[in-house]
Length: 341
Image 1 (spheres, one colour):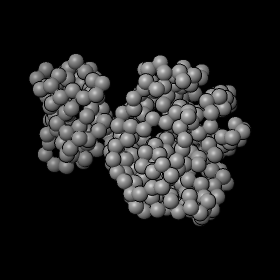
Image 2 (cartoon, rainbow, N blue to C red; image 1 turned 135 degrees about the horizontal axis):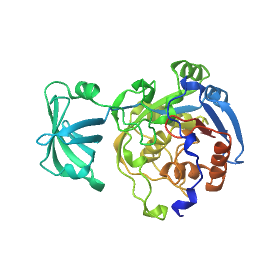
Image 3 (cartoon, rainbow, N blue to C red; image 1 turned 30 degrees about the vertical axis):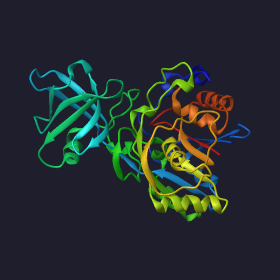
């Protein structure tokens, strides 16, 4: 399949620049993956489409304030770092702009010297390996000096950092939010639980590989970046029991979906597991675990629109996206949601 097969025309004004006033008042497109039929709802209506005995799988990763603005130690030249992945306690893989200023051995300072780093090597696709120096607790310093790593298509300033976190975020380590989860409130999660729907929490620390443009012409040529995931025994048991009892396993977001499909055995059985995944799901893939997904509307020609097309069909998904454009749905990280069932 060609990457261009997943193109659709999206007006720039439909890219959401800020979150909905209330998380669960975003719009919701309910999509039947067999018939391709759609319904137009509000996100809090999701409770009406979940059944007793179903299981929602949520990614409890928490976004790092991973964008740092600093300067070159000897010249004062301005530079921007985006932390992608922690390698050990003080060593990270990072994107640096402008990259030509960040040769191995170059040193940078942030926040009047409270945080310093040295470039120690070159990583994948021009990323840099950097080692930090500081006094105190790194996470506290980063929380103070860092900015939320909003995607480049969001140009408005985010007033409240927590709006780029899910209400159930817990495990710090992502370079981007698992955005399907941004629509849930504590109250909505309670209503869903009260209906007899189980919740299973997994962790996948979102890297930028998920969002990077596909540069290959054909899908099979594209290589996904590695991301760390973790499923504990309790979550595995909840999901296995749901399948055994005839309930549906519904992933909240493509990150939860990729975690489950990476960790599962061929028969769909799960055990507690942790590791790195480079799984790339596109049409032709046979799902082992999930029966449905709650997800935001994705970029044209992205790996994420390819993933959801694997759950239905390319033609039906592109048709649903064209309806979403016509109906003026909001797209991407702060946009509206879709429930594929």
